Length: 390
Image (cartoon, rainbow, N blue to C red; front, side, top):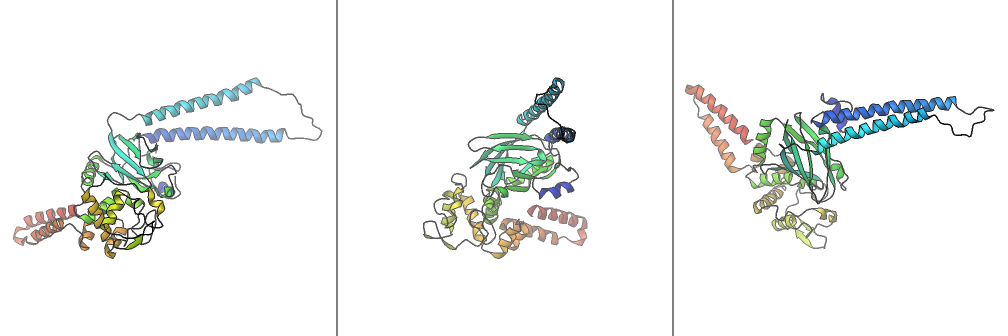
C-alpha cells in the first residue's frame, strides 16, 4: 500500500485502519485471517518479552553467586512450548490452504477477460472484443482474468479485492474474484518490472458497475470513434502508448514526447537525419527498433504492432500525432480527455455527428407556442440526443 493511498482509505467509510474497502468475496476471509495471525503474534510477543524482562531481573548476576554448569530441564514446560506453537502453525497452514484453494478455483460461470501486461501498462480485452486500458466489471459476478505478459514478470494486484497474482512471460496466468461493492479502485503492479515500475499504477483503474451500467459501458467501449483524430486519441490510450510517450512538450517518460513532434527533423542512432512524417510513424509502429531516435536507445523495448493494427488504425494514429501540433488540441488532450464539444470547437469533431446535432437544434427551434406539448417533447428528445453525442 502506497503512502498516497492512506488518506483515501481513512476517508472511505467502507475501509478500516488496517485495510481498504472489502470490495470482493475474498476480503472477509483474508482480513479475518490476518487479524487472527496478528493477535496470535501480539500475545506471544507480550508473553516472551515479559518473560525475558522478568528473567533478566530475577536471574541477574549478583555478587558471590556461582552458576550451576549442569543443563537443567523441565519436560512439562518444554513439551508445552513445543506442542502449542506447533498446533497453532498447523492450524495457520490449514486455514491458509483453504483460502488459497478458494482463490485458485474459479466457479464455472465467470466473465472471462484477457489481460495483457507490458512495461509499463495494462490492457484488458472483453468478451465482445472491446479493448480498454481500465478494468470494468459488474458487481456480484465472478470474474476470471487470463493474464499474459509481453515482456517481463509483472504482478496484478487490487488491494480492495485482496487479489494478487504474478503475470509471467511465456505462460497464461489465471486468477478470479467476485466484486461485491460498486466503485473505483486502484490497480498496482506488485512486482519490480524495470525503471518505470513505480509508474505502473492505475489510480481508479478498476471500475465496478451495476449490471446495467456494465452492459452499457461494454457496448460503448466496443465502438471506436469515427473521426480519424479522435480514433487515434482513443488508440493512444487503449494500446498503452501513454505509458511511454508523454503529451507534454519535452517531457520524457521512456520514449520521446508526442507533443509538437510531427513534421520535425531529428537524428537516429545511426546519425542519419529523418523527418517525423507519415512514413516514419508507420515504420515506427511496425518496426520500432529500425529507426530509433538518438538518445532513446532504452526505448528499444517497445513492442512491434505488426499484425496487431489495421491500416485505418495506423492512419488514425498518424492523424492524432499530426493534430498534436495544434496548441488548443494539445491543451485539451493534456486535460485528460477530449469531449465531443471540445473536439467540435477545435474543428476535429465528426462531421456527420455535428450535422445531426445542428439538425436537431434547428428542429427544436421551429416548434411554435401553439403546440406547446409537442415542442416540450421535441426539446426533451433533442436534449437526449445532445447528451448521447457528448
